[in-house]
Amino acid sequence: DAGITQSPRYKITETGRQVTLMCHQTWSHSYMFWYRQDLGHGLRLIYYSAAADITDKGEVPDGYVVSRSKTENFPLTLESATRSQTSVYFCASSEGGSQPQHFGDGTRLSIL
Amino acid sequence: EDQVTQSPEALRLQEGESSSLNCSYTVSGLRGLFWYRQDPGKGPEFLFTLYSAGEEKEKERLKATLTKKESFLHITAPKPEDSATYLCAVQAGGTYKYIFGTGTRLKVLA
Image (cartoon, rainbow over all chains, first blue to last red; front, side, top):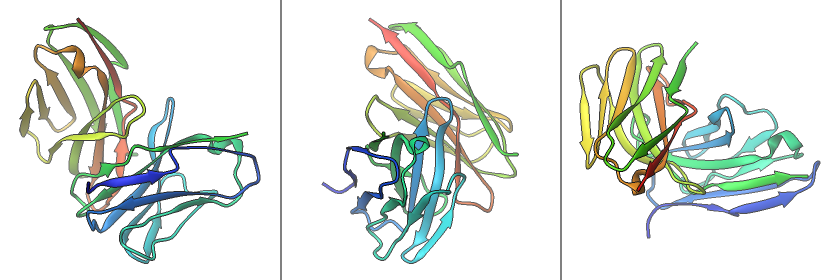
């Protein structure tokens, strides 16, 4: 089925380790987004991309790195994980900048 | 500063008891307001987009309305399967970014 998939669904790691969260969409949407969802804060934008090889910072980008070499993939890397990065991470995509964003089912990341 | 506030934080309804959820916003030139439904362990599911004051959208038991300062999500004769967290997001003019509220947790009792 077409859609947006995130992997892994669950991940436990230790502080200081590098971890990469994957996001793949089959709609050929131009725009892709990474959010984190924490109690009391709602969804906050980490990074977004308007097209392959074009990325920009969101509200909370520190400690994260993204790349987009192919339209369908938008991986998010935590270069040196910290406990404050324990969260649920959602990837989203949209056909155009003002079109609705469609979300994956998230990755629950725990950093010990 | 662009901001979105949703109320109430939580709402319990009896099956068939209609109610409304509120989303108040301040934004520099509204580009769009979006409503989502989120079930536990799932990502947000798109419901509606509203672009200008006075606009209304309907889907089954849900109806979304928009004014210059707030949006309402009206739920008519809700059923237990309507239980979820409802999220509101706004997009300011000239940007692709959404600003989300913290959501309203709705529980509909049979």
